[in-house]
Length: 398
Image (cartoon, rainbow, N blue to C red; front, side, top):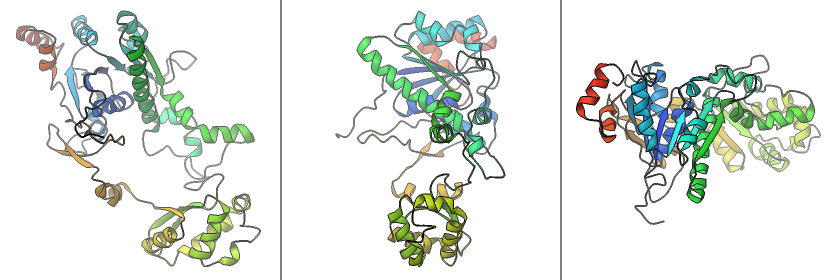
């Protein structure tokens, strides 16, 4: 691929009335790929995710992660003057994204169906908790609540204790379907000239991600058991302690790998063909015995020694890292995945987005301060300095 290629979304303008994680993370993907993203925030504090914590140089960790590369415009869109400004922004936009609380977008005539009726080329995205129909349509939805409703909590944790995922899985799933939905709609518009609504719900998105345990439960008539880091239908597939206090997770996917593990790593060739262990079905039925055998074999080894021996035998494995170890991971360093992005409090470390397009570098712009771009964006709409100042003095803009 030739160097210096344009990013695929250069020339695309996105207007987002967004908060928390699902919509902001979706639009951040668009910004990384070259789109201009104008983030419309409340004048009284902005996106509430700005105030979750102060962990990243005084800024909120969620906000830093999900909002780089955007322009922040602070408007009171409940005021008719603020809505008029927003309408002018939408007129020149290619994409509009919103994840307001249930019913709010429709009351403001910012829902996808209303906007697309007024602007046929616009791609308008509604991200909701449970979708626009059904008994849950008006129910408030936060990530952990949707994790519970979609069954993720029921399959995460130990047999004794269900737990939520350690990341906002419902928000992220909705964000990524909104992102891919926008890309699909842009392709369709290129051939038809028409935009149209895109609907994504957190519940639908996470229900899709629950596909394996969902089909397993429907097929067997029994809800899958929680197994910690073990696997419901594969053994051995678990984390095991090492002599230096570390943990190494390994996964045996077939009976040939079990034989190599028994002979080359555990030093137990007798276990390779033992009736209790020879097949995955047998190993799953005898999971406790399998785990005890593997734990005994790895216990004298350090984590480094265990990984080396497993790698040599061709057995899939991983260290059980914490986030500090992830930040220092040699794979990220070797592939030069770290960059710096700007912020009102100085430069911050950030990972490159997972989509790599050789020949072009993702934008990875600064994390915006609240209302940092209000004046510039309003000037771009043709408002005079006096008009902008009047909006600010009245509290409609910031």
